[in-house]
Image 1 (cartoon, rainbow, N blue to C red):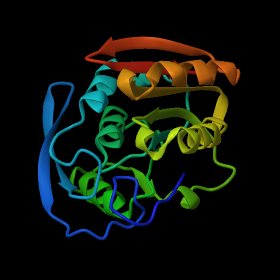
Image 2 (tube, one colour):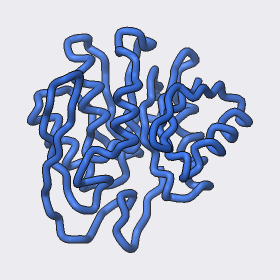
Image 3 (cartoon, rainbow, N blue to C red):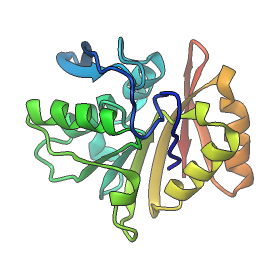
Amino acid sequence: MTTVSGPDHYFTDDPRSARTPQQVRLRIDGESVELTTSTGTFSPRRIDPGTALLLESLPPPSTWPEGPVLDLGCGYGPLAVAVAHRSSGTGREVWAVDVNARARDDCRANVARLGLEVRVAAPDEVPEGHRFAVIVSNPPVRIGKDALHSLLEHWLDRLRPDGVAWLVVSRHLGADSLAAWLTERGRSVERVRSRRGYRVLQVR
């Protein structure tokens, strides 16, 4: 995953701006939980609408291929929290990966407070040979097309043969061209839902 130095962005590896904690509410299957966020992370004031759409669109984990789940670009952890909550008691391994150290700290704090089992890691802390059955991601499209393509190619290559990824991308930020690129790379891509300019893509 690309790391960035210089001015703070949500994809900066080590934000230098003053850290201002905030709280947002995440709804999971009718239940509301509180997550801590910070300035210098992605969408710290609310659950991003793309993330919310992806959460609504995911089928039950009981229907997923067996094996580890990766939340790619986890931020402060709404997707990882929801996946771990829905998978509670199944023994399914959940990873949350982000380049942003501040986001990882918030994610660790959130899953710990909620009593969830999630492995929060920087990209290079994931063992090289580790393969995933499922990837969920609201990917960092603002890193630029080339960097985004490199990021997705790297992690989608770590799907197991029967694995599946669910991505959410704004149409205005290139969802349709990304779907076309993934198809050109030999992947099966299905648009499973659209709302307010966001596309949820299922990738195999």
